[in-house]
Amino acid sequence: MIPRHLESRIVTLLGYFPCVAVNGVRQSGKTTLIGSLPGEWRRFDMESAADRAQVLADPDLFLRLHPQGVIVDEAQLAPPLFPALRVAIDSNRGRKGRFVLSGSSSPDLARNVSESLAGRIALVELAPLSLAEAYRLPASPIYPLLRERASPQDVMAAAAPRLDLRQVLEHWFQGGYPEPWSSADAEFRRFWHRHYLDTYLMRDIGGLFPGLNRDRFRQFIQLLSNLSGAILNNAEIARALGVSEPTVRDWLTIAHGTYLWRHLPAWDRSPHKQLVRHPKGWLRDSGLLHRLLQVPDADALLAHPLAGRSWEAYAGEMLLRGFAAAGIDVTPAHYRTRGGAEIDLVLAGEAGVLPVEIKLASTTEPRSLRALSEFVTGHGCPLGVVVNNDDQPRLLAERIVAIPAAAL
Image (cartoon, rainbow, N blue to C red; front, side):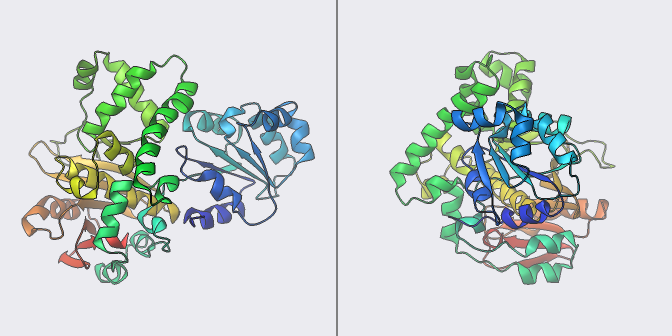
C-alpha cells in the first residue's frame, strides 16, 4: 500500500464530524485508503449485490443494527441510505467518527449530501497519487508556509528538491493512478490506461447519464486532450464535433463533475478592464492525457508540441493536491488580459491570493515575470510563485520565489 497524505486529514475530520465522505475519480485509491483507517470498521460495497441488498432492504433498521464503524463504498449507488443516515446521526449528534462514505461520481453524491446531510458531514477529495506520494515521501512543508503567508526566505528554505529530474519526468509522463504506478511493466501501464478510459466511460459516466451518446462523448474527451491547458471556445468545440453549444457545456460539466477534467474559470477580481473572460481547463491526470495524445515515453513527451501545456496542467494539479492534502482550501482560476499578460494559475483562499507561473524549463528569464510582478503589486499579494525544473529554489524578485517541481 502506498501511504496517502489525505489519511491524516480524514482522521482529523472524523474527530469533528459524525460522517466523512471521500470522493474522487474511479481507481484513485479510495477503497484502499478508507480500509487503512485506524479503528474497527465494517465495509459495505454498494457494487456488491449482497451488500447492497443488506443495506437497502431497510436502511433505518440497518443503521440501528450498525450505529457506528460503518464504511459504505460507492455510496452514490444507494440514494435511500442518505435520509436514513440523517436520522441515525441526529439520534446521537454528539457522537463523532461513526460513518465513512466513498463515491466515484460527485454529482449524485453531492446532491444527496446537500439534501440530507448538510452540516453533518465533511467532504474530501482523493485524487490520484501526487509526486511525493508516488515516491513515498512525506507531504511537502511548503503548503502550510504558503497558508501562513511566510516570508520568501522561509518558503525557499522549505523548497529544496527531494527528487531528481528523471523521477519528476517519469511521474509527469505516467500520471498518478496507483495501479499502473505500482507496476514496472510498461506494457501493462499502456493497456491499463487504454482500458481504464473505456471502462470509466461505460461504467461510471454512462451509468450516471443514461441518455449520453457514449461514442460522441468519447470523441469529445479525445478533443479535450488537444485542448488541455488552453482557453476554451465552446462554439469552436461544437462546430468540430457537430453538436450544439449547450451540449458542449453539458459535456464539460459532466467531465468536471466526474473528476476527469479541471474547469478553470477566468479570474474576475481585478481592476483591469481588459480581461479575457473565457475559461480554460485541463485533463486532471497527466498519464491519461499522454495516452490520449499517444505519447510513447517520457523522452518523446519533452519534444511533443503540447509539452508546455501538459506540464502546466501537471504542475497545477500537484499544487492543488498538495493544498488539499494539507486541508487548505483554495479556488483555482486563470488570468489573462487582452493585451497578452497571462498568469497560469491564481489560487484564492486561506493563503490569500497566490499567483503561480509554471515553466517547464529549469531557468526563468526575468522578462517573463512582468505579468506576475504586476499582479503581485496590483493585488497586494504577499508572494508570487514560479514552479519550474531548477535544481534549487531561488528568489527571482522581492516577492517572487521560484520553487522546483521536485520540491512539491
